[in-house]
Image (cartoon, rainbow, N blue to C red):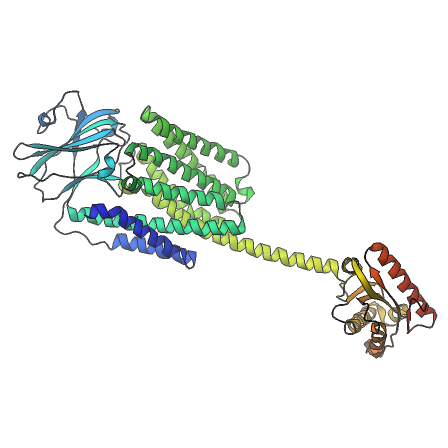
Length: 574
C-alpha cells in the first residue's frame, strides 16, 4: 500500500515545502529548509529485526537457448572475480550467493541501469523456480525513489535459496546488476521515507529559489538571472528524472529516462557556467577563459545530445566522451574561482565557496564513471546534493550583489542629484542660475511680471569688505529676496549682483514689496545696501518673447539707475 502512496506523498511534500519556502526571508528559508532535510534524514528511526543484506554476485555471458533452472547451484562458467563492468555490452546471467533464511515479504533492490530487460529467477529449497521481470518499457512498475528497482520475492511454501538474473541488452557502463541487496519491508519503507524527505525538501528549496529569482529578475533585469533560473529549473527536472519520480508518475520508458537524465545534467552544468560568466565582473573572465568556457559547454552539450540520440550504440565511447567533457567543463571552474576569489567584490568569494562542494562531488562522480571508485548511491546523487548547495549559496551571493547594486544605484542617484543641483543652482546663494531660470520660464503663454534687481554700487561693497564680505552680502541679499517673493515665483541670480524674479501677472505689487524688503534687510557690518529694480509684464511663449520682455525690463532697470538708484521703474514709465 505504501508503494502506491509514495509518489502522491512525495508530490504533497514537494508542494508543501515549495509553499512554505516562498514566504518570508529567502535566506532564513534556505537555512531552515536544509535543517529540515538533514533532520529528516538523521532522525529516521532505525529498523529493528530487519533485513538489509548486500549480495555478492557472479556473472557469465548468456547463450541463446539456455535455461535458468540449469544455472543455479554451482554450475560452471560464472566469473566471481572480475568486476562486472569489465565485460562488454550484451546479454548476461548474474547469479547471487546462496541466501540465508529470510523473513516473509523480503524484496530484492538494485540500482537502475541501461538494459532492454531484466528477469529475476528465484530458486526455492524444494527445487521450484519462479520468475519476475520487466522490460525497459514496464520497468516503472518496480521503480522506487532513488532510481532503484525493487522486486518482491514471491511467497512460496519453501524458502528462497538463490537468485539468478537474466539481463538482456545491457550497456554495462556501471555494471550488470547494480549493488543488489535484500530488504525487509520495514527497511524498504525507512529508505523510502528518507528519500521522500530528501527529494521533497530539495524540490521545495529549489522551487522557492526559482520563484524568488524569477520575481527578482523581472524587477531588476540583471543579465545573470536568466541562466540562474534556467540552472535551477534544469536541476529540478534532473532531480525528478534521476530520482525515478518521473518514471513512477508518468510510466516513462526507463532507457528514455536515462537519456533525459544526461540531457538535463548537461543543461544544468552549462546553465551554471553561463550564470558564472555573467555573474562575475568582466575582468574575471577576460582573456582565454571566456572562449574556453564557451567551447567546453558547447562540447558538453554536443556529447550529451550524442549520448541521448545514439545510445546504446557506441555506449562506452559515448559515456567516456560525456565524462571527459564534463570533467573539462569542471576544470575550467578552477581558474574562474581563482580569479573570483581574488576579485575585489566580496560576493565573488561567496560564489567561489558555493562552487567548492560541486567541484568535490563532481570529481568523485567522474572518478566513479571512469571506474576508479566503486558505485555508491550517494556518489551517484552527489551532483544533485552539490548543485542544490551551490544554488543556495549562489542565492546568497545574488542577494549580496543585489544589495551592492542597490547601494551603488543609490549613490549614483545621489551624485546625479548633487550634480543636477550644482548645474541648476547658484553655488553661492542657492538660488536658480540663469540656465535653469530660462528653462522654467520660457514656454509660458500667459502674461507674467519680470523684475530685474541690481545691487547699487556693489563694486564699492567689495572694495570696503573684500570679496568674502561681498559674498556674505550677496547671501543676505538673496535671502531677503527669497522671503519677499510668493511660492510660485521663480527667483534666480543672473550673475554678479544681478537677480531676476518671475511671477504671475496679478503680482503687480511685487516690485514694491521687494524694494521695501531690501531696504529693511539688515546687512553685514551694518552696511547700507540699496538696489534698483526694473519691471515689465508680458508673455514668454518662446525665446523671442523672452528677449523682448528682458530688454524692456532691463531698460526700466537702467532708467531707475539714471533716476538716482534705490527705486523701481516699470517699462512703460521708462
